[in-house]
Image (tube, rainbow, N blue to C red; front, top):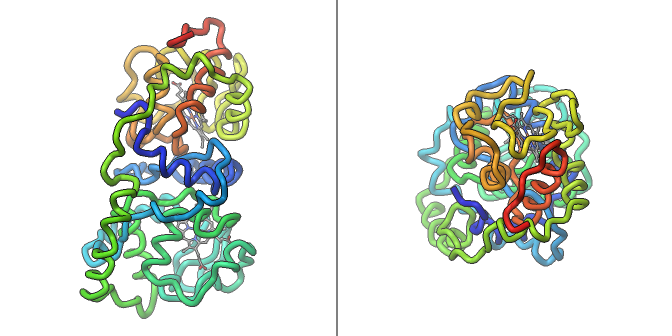
Length: 335
Ligand code: HEC
Ligand code: HEC
């Protein structure tokens, strides 16, 4: 497992300027509600980057963004897409013809239909500004890759589907929710999309890993910023976790003293089998860093509906802050 998330640095920078902590936070929270009662997805589809630092608006270009789904649509796994949508989208969206708008608009007929124009739903100004004609496969894939990059300020509190195959499965499924599904891409369209792909694919997340350059997080504890760690925790973790001594378990377990404690063993919390299978001794700085970099890579199927902290320094800040909230803090590397 990567300790440093090197290959996600680029996309991290891009995403950082776009997603607000609030949206991620709310989205993660919603996702958790969706994930908790169900079996979790087989593929860790939300390999997403969380915002840590403000980036210039110029970094918002989606240039290094998603691989095309066009060549995958014909063979996409529609039942998988359906299962994914049930788990991750159905809390906010109805899917049946004439279904009521909920937190989000009804999605029947959305592929091929007019953008952001479902009846009975009040769309944000952010998406209305991006509405241009009808949804096609490319625009739908781009929206679902990263809603808040597609329409900064959108009310859709969902981080996006980073896995290209999953995105294709989902769009292939959404396509079927229609009396007259949009035709699949023609061989010519597939050829055109594939020809345009290599450049994007090279820079895309999940493409070839970037050359290793990022320093280990171990060098970052020495300059960890506890108050930054605290702010970040308040913003991104505290909806699910208490951190005070004896604090109640919530969506997630109480975290007082977690660094150095037995993994996934807080009394009174009902952990998923996914994390129980990964529990191995006590939390060290390293294992905690791996977990917080990407919970669903660490324990595929975990209930922690949080995409992970991709920025190494931020992860160090948060771990140092967690470590401070303990009767017996451990010695962090380099400190
Ligand atoms: C937390 C609630 C929430 C979740 C989860 C969510 N959405 Fe949305 N979705 C919204 C909202 C709200 C909007 C309207 C956006 C706006 O007005 O800014 C929206 C808009 C959309 C649209 C545009 C619809 C149109 O009328 O053009 C599509 C397509 C969509 N969502 C698909 C999905 C899919 C697929 C998933 C799961 C992978 C998903 N959404 C998960 C809340 C959500
Ligand atoms: C949407 C809710 C949610 C959010 C947000 C969230 N967590 Fe969690 N967290 C959980 C759940 C649920 C578990 C238990 C995982 C399981 O059983 O699969 C967990 C487990 C953990 C554990 C392991 C605890 C143990 O007992 O060993 C740590 C550490 C942790 N979370 C830290 C964080 C940090 C730090 C953040 C913010 C950066 C965060 N979490 C954000 C829900 C959340």
